Structures are given as C-alpha cells and as structure tokens.
Length: 261
Image (cartoon, rainbow, N blue to C red):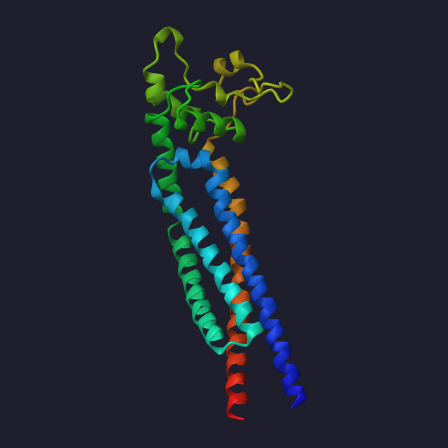
C-alpha cells in the first residue's frame, strides 16, 4: 500500500513538473508571437493588407495563451487531485495535439505558396506605395529601414525599383533608379550615411558600395531562424503533451480505484 501511495505521489509531482514545462512552453509561444507583431512591424508594413502574415502571428499568440492556460489547469489539477480538472486537461491536451499535427502538415504543404504570396505583396508595396527616401509614410519608412538594417535592395534586387511608380514619376534631370537606403552604410559614421553614395549610384553591381541581394531572401533567412525555434518548442510541447496525457489518465484511474476501495 505504501509502495502504491509512493508511486501515486511520484506520478502526481511528475505531472506537476511536466505541466510546469508545458506552461513555460505556452509562455514561449506567446513571447514569439508578440515579438513578431512588435519587433517586425516594418515587415508587416511591407506585406501591405495581406492578412496571412498578421493572422498567423495572432494565431501564434492565441495558441500560446491557450497552452499557457491549459498548463496552469494541469498544475492545479495535479496538486489538488481534482478528477474533473484532470479529465478536462486531458481533453484540451488531445485537442491541442491534434491541432498541432494539422498545423504542421498545412505549414509544410503550403510553405512555397505562402512565400510567394509574401514576396508578391512586398513587391506590390514597392511598386505602388513607395514615395521616396525622405518620405515619412509607413510604407516608405519601412522600406528604407529594412534596406538599411538587412543590407538589401528591393524585393529580389535593385532592378525591382526601375519599374516602380516612384522612379517612373521622377523628373529626368533628378532621376534616381533606387533609394539611397540601398547603398552600403559607413559603419564608422555616427549618422549611418552611405559609404560612397556617388559610387553606389554609378555602379549598382559593385557590392562594395551597393547592397547585394533582395530583401525578401534576407528577411526570410531571419524568420527561418525564429521558425527553427518555434519548431523546437513545438516538438518539446508535443513530447510534454503525450506524457501529460498519460500521467493524467493514470492519476484519474488511480483515484477511481481508491474511491471503489
């Protein structure tokens, strides 16, 4: 009997520990979702009114908050030895686990299409909405900021700017084929000026003065690093969920057996 009681207590506290990890995993997902919305506001501006990226970020926040709540529920159920809480916890875990599998499959299936949609929306804002290097509207400011921070030019390259409304509407005498934010910055300069703006405009193929490569690929690489973090967190959550479901059912069965006795 003492042995059974010891195993039951061990199971109870293990369930509490696993739920604590689950709760922290939810907090991590919530944090990544908030980071996407707050820290990557410039990227959100560049994809315009496309709801795909923004919706995905808010879904991440919602899932993180839900996982956070379920983890808290599991901790309380384990400590208070509440059969009702543990059964509800098991059902919610099962639903989250199923949703996680569906989301992973859909993300894999539509990955290429999603990337194409985001690339097209970036190019659309570049072609139609950019107003100039000194313009203060959100789209222009976002493009200038992104090109400086990521060291890139255009969606796929500086050639994207040649057909933009901003370039086409300039007077012939003062025409710029791309914004000065495409030029390599002087790291020693306190005001972050271009290394050699004249050379940059004279020869845009010279990577010493001109940012080589488009912004989409460079920004995609940045987000892929975060996606790897999300994938690792997702695998950890899945492992914790399986263990949580097993321990919760074992605890409920043990409580039922004790009630019969």
